[in-house]
Length: 307
Ligand code: TXA
Ligand code: MG
Image (cartoon, rainbow, N blue to C red; front, top):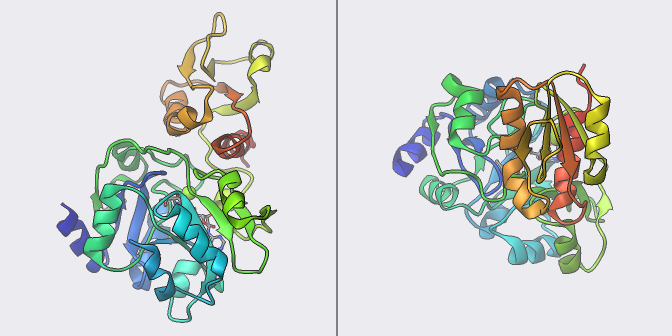
């Protein structure tokens, strides 16, 4: 299957594959026409840059230039893992990948299937999350099939994603390191290695940073766990709570209080809300530290009213 998937990439086709964070929709990052198909399949605006996935941190230099020492240090500590670095791109990187930006996002995923695919393919794979634009990221192969179905040539099934929330994005392209998206790797761990705090990123056009994103159809209300009951009493319609404990009289989808355990459940839980036809999901916010910061970020975006 890996050999077949690598062949498909070489032929300019789209391959969905598991990573430790979420499933990606991959194409040969050196082939603009293949990359263009990603945007069509996702219905994604084509000035939104993609992350290029590489097999090892040794390949950074094939895609980026003027690589700062901080990048080498972060990769030494966290690659493979849920970290994406934004660096100055080399001039031979197709504009289709970077949405015309002078920078490139690079990451080394930590998943046996993703890594086998990257090694077999032998080059970088451009891949956003394998969902339709604005929707919840897929954390199983079945979610990918539901989201993209016929527009993917091949889906590699690696089971449920272990981390369950997208990579942390750190911009090292303009001097001071900046956090563009909280994610699976806690910002605190990155700051400890850098020996300095991360600035909050000046956000470029990044789909994961749009106010309304990662959103199910149902209305999402994220509240402190202690305010669950009061919030449930305020709302009307078919209500469900996402929490680790019951609120009397309301159905519940389990979401652990520990953010490390909640992250791999989060997107599947939001999907279940829609599948079961609820109008409103009242969600208990985890503590906003570590990966909890990424969960709080995604819930805030999921609860933003769409236009
Ligand atoms: O965990 C992940 O990062 C997953 C898996 C598949 O690796 N990928 C993912 O891709 O979440 P996507 O496209 O859904 O989100 C990528 C984010 C976007 O917010 C995008 O704008 C940002 O990375 N990004 C990519 N290249 C960038 C660049 N050059 N400058 C700023 N942001 C960039
Ligand atoms: Mg995405």
